[in-house]
Image (cartoon, rainbow, N blue to C red; front, side):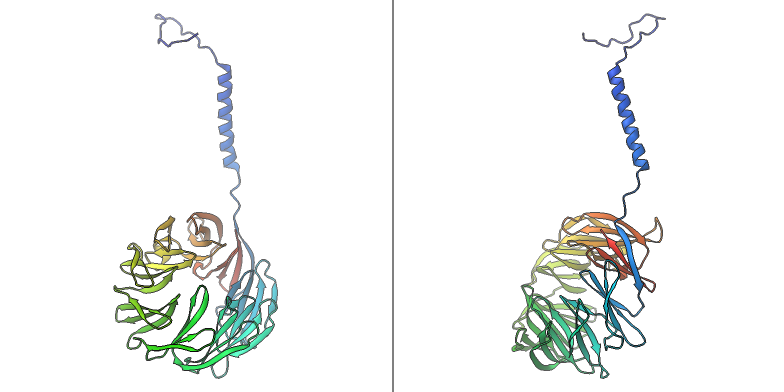
Length: 426
C-alpha cells in the first residue's frame, strides 16, 4: 500500500495518531550513531603516530672539528694538543672503527671520502699542502704525496695540485687512487686557479689560469697540452673559473656588475656571455642558470638562449637529478622556496615556506629542517620527495643549529654545543 502525506486531517481537539515504528530502520540508525561515536572515541584516545626520527648516539665535537660522510661511516677530524687525528665511527651504533695516531701530520680541516679510500690533507713545516690516502675500512695508510687532492672515483685516480708557499699551483700530477702510482706529472705556469672539465661523468680536460689570464688546457689522461690562450681575467674585484660540463665558465665581478662568459673547454672558443646584471652563475642539469635581481634564468649552454625564466625567484641551488631549489632570498627562513624541474623551471609540488636548512635524505629525497615554536625549542624534520614534491612530516628532535647539520641516507648529523648528535631518519 502506498501512503501519501496529506498533512494534518484530524479534526480540532483530536489527538494525533501514533506513527508506526520502523524497528529495522531504528536499529540501523542506532548502530550508525554508535559506530560514529566509537570512531570519534578511538580517534581521541589513539596515540599519535610514532616519530620517524630518533637520536642514536652522540660524541664530543669541538669548534675546530670537521666531519665527512661516506655510506654508513662518519669520519671526524678532531683537534688535540698533539695535532689533529681522524676517527671513523659506525653511523648506526657510534662504535669507533679505527683512528689515526695523534700528530700524524693531518691538517685540521676536512677529509675527503673517495670510494674505498679516504684522502686526508696534510701541511708540512714549509706550509706546502700534501695528501695522505687511508684505507676507508681500516685506516691503514696507503700512500703519502705532495699536492692538494681532487679525486675521480669514476676513473680511479687522483689529480694532485702541487703548490708553493704562497698557495700558487706550480705542477699537476695524476696518480692511482688506491696505490698512489704516478701516471704523469707536469710543471705548469704558476696558476691562481685550475679546474677539471668532464663529459659523461668522466674528467676529460684540465684548465689552469695565471694571474694575467693565460689559460692552458691539458688532457686529463696524459697531461699533454691541448691548447693555450688568454682570457679577460685581472683588473676586477674577483674572478673565478669553474666547469659547467662540458663547458668552462669564467665569472668576473667589477664594480657592481658580474659578467659570465662561457667557453668551449677544448679550445677556449667563447660561446656566449651574460647580457644582463646577474649575481652568479651555476650549472643547472643540462642547462646553465644565471641568477640575480631580475630572476633565475635557465639558459642553453651552447648559445645562452633563454629556455625558462622565474622572475619571482632570485637564488638557485642545483640538487642534481634534474631538480633545483629556487628561493626569493638567500635567507631561506624569510622567503618561500620551491622545488622545480631544471629543464623547464616548472614548480613541482607546493611551495616550501619558512625553511631554515636542507640536508641530504634517502635516495631521491631531501630533508627539510625548521625550528618550531609549538612545541618550543624543537627542530621539525620533514622529507621532500624530489620526484613529486610531496612533503612528509617525520617528527621533531631537540633544537639544534639547523644550518650546520649534515645528512646522508637514513641519518642526520647535527652539532649542538660541543656535541655531535646522530639521529636516525625514516
